[in-house]
Image (spheres, rainbow, N blue to C red):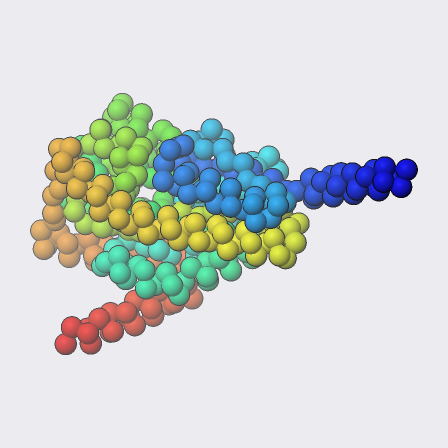
Length: 340
């Protein structure tokens, strides 16, 4: 009798522990445009599996990949109504909440990926803190690489660009504002509509990274790439702060550690993949063309005024621009001393 009673009690304890654990579990429904099988998704699934193990299934992640939940703007709307808990989106889609998260995409600010790496060591956390203040917990930032102009007709000068039908992301207010300062009338489209826009002739010019051009199949619709890194692309893993705050402090720390590490790994791999993707574009018949010295001067002169115009329009803060330029100055000074 005593043995049977002890067994019943043990079973009840196990069941109670299991049910309590299940009741306290939180599933984060996360949407992304990245397709299954891509580097992003392989690493994201890897992180989700490790997270489930480390938290004993208290924190689970369910991904909705390949854009099944819609474009970034739709994903953000679904986060607001609670249908989703977060998304892996391009930084520009969050600019209406926190404009300064677009600081890396200022045109022609960076001369090399080494400059980007140095600046990000100092500014990533500033962006994460800023996103926290507007209601988003940022679990990771990953660079998508430099964006280049890809087009159906050669684009070498700003004049060429003004004659083109230029795409900008429909939900990126900062990019839309920045393009206007080049005296260009852009055509806003969601990422999902760009390939069709190229096919129909609605647009004939895009700016994106080599790896994205191939992944999204845009490269099949263009013939030229202007060999000038125009701006830097960044992706953000953003989660509704109200949802994230429901986790215990310990589980929050585990989530940040695992997903932060995963994003750093993605970051490093994407840098390598972009180099290979640029060569792949060349091998597939895309012509790499370079602006003349005179055209370069014109590009840099036009780009130099964009940050100040954005500040005037309330799309960027002077403080964030000062931080960026301060770190760039430090890096370039160090490099000049090394090269002496």
